[in-house]
Image (cartoon, rainbow over all chains, first blue to last red; front, side):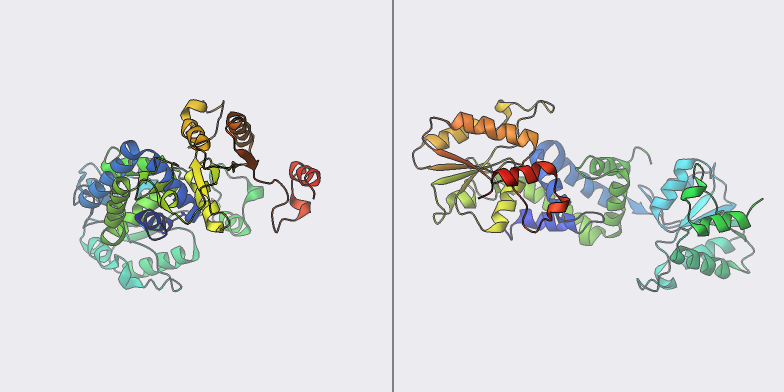
Length: 195
Length: 195
């Protein structure tokens, strides 16, 4: 039993982000209780997604087509590129419907601790896109963490001399946020950036 | 994008126990970043487990064989049956190596709220096993929740007249537990059951 496929499957699930051994066991037992309705369709869908979803060669987004629907959409502006760390950040910005330009997914942020250097990120393709003439502005939308901000600095340094203006997401009080619950750094930044 | 297989897969993961929309997204993006190494093998393993793992017809355990390895093991005593709610409880008891008898998995507990009645549980097969003469003791190992304990009462009432003795897991202070942090019910039970 200990070396069977069941334990092996639980181990595989335990390796996924956010899942421990106990939650992996719960998921596998749940799947086994609904083999035909949930378990087999889930596996088939995973195989289908693994085969059909492609990385967009232009921006790094995930889609069924390459280039992706956003890069192909002629109604979207070609003048702005929004630089994000990962596809889930792109989805978060798309959910707002507040941005109608192009994207560029870096595939991570620079991190000395995790050993992520500039070579592991999609920086060369970003340089090529910024230089091609159509782009006027690069919006850097990286997380406000130490690694995110040092990557933002690196990217804006790199883009100097490409003839594009570089902007960053504003820092400040989140909409709906109570001042009393905010950390000192956010309040200080919001004060300094007051307008 | 919103109706594509990618969103569909995230929805499928969101339906699994313990996973919300955000954790499902993280898992799917993680899988897509390791298609060959993690994603495809995971799907293949899910299909393999769905096909190879069977419900044991005697006790309700999950195993590659039917009857399961525990029911087939001639070194295990046939005199005791330990009644558990689900397979994960059986695994929890097996991990202790403290029990060397047979099991019986009910497949849940009676619950008025969730609409689980006696017909949905493997009670008839338990009666048949308890009556077959070889069994001397039925150990009821259900959770100490309201539903678990009412199921325990129901099962022990049902087994009356089958010629087996019925026992329950002891209630009391958990090993390593500090009295100060225990609820009143547990302390009261531990006091009443002192020996």
